[in-house]
Image (tube, rainbow, N blue to C red; front, side):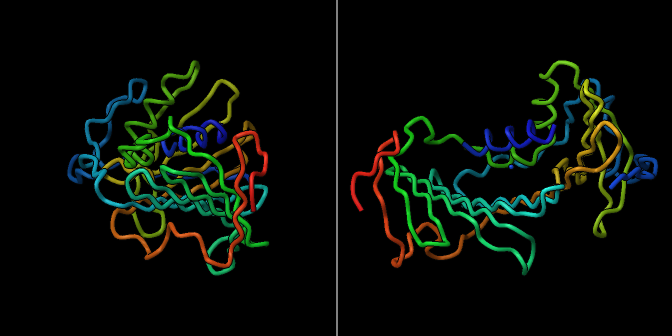
Length: 239
């Protein structure tokens, strides 16, 4: 189920046993926690603000799973993208790869040996993400899930997480595994916890989307990196 969600995220961009005691969702006295309609037909009325495609944005996806910990950070300004992949979290994280996508080329940077593979651009990709908010918007993600046969979505109440009370919805599939989605009062996804069919937690993913200025030179190739030009088939043209 996690693989399907990661595919949804990447599509929108172009990856111990635990039973939770959830408190009942509070009533209309707190509008941010007002119950949603039955989730068999989930399309919440509350949505995010209108898309802001003119603003640069940063999307961070931190993951903890059975294979370890990692972070993927995407920087975007118009059609230009940079995707950094790290192993580990926080101060201990180590950069593994960098991908920079422009209208002219795709660059794959290897920080270990300071080499760059340059590939031709993908013309079909231009303008593929006019609404980055769709990556964290529950209405969009739940709509994608509901298109899959056998998937069910249910309301689970609310839970405190990192000092914030979040609404929780469960997405279950026919294989009996499930994912719990943690949402703000504006239906923004902040966390996703995946469980296998035995109820054991297998993934914990945290999402953060921010709009605003990007670090200076974020899309520049470092001058000490060596560039290799390659064709779409992988043939090296020059160094």
